[in-house]
Length: 117
Image (cartoon, rainbow, N blue to C red):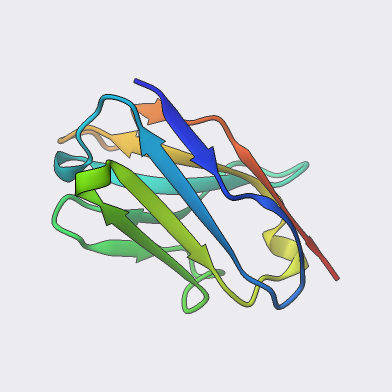
């Protein structure tokens, strides 16, 4: 299974980015999809996730600014990031958790998001 994330980059504070993650084999419709991030010197943290039924969960720090969505037909998950802040700077990873799994089973390569002040 390969997860290919894209859409990262450099943006000014207050700007927006949309991350995308496509899977080569796994079927998104039955799994929980997520985005994690890791900033320099910090632990990796969950940013957002969406279940097979469409229920979403967000970290408190991004609630109201980020939106996770998926397109099952395209096996793609998105993270729309608005009102970006310098503290959002991190490497972002997309993940897939199999049914019944409490943690991600698959991780994509990270994509760098840098927010300048």
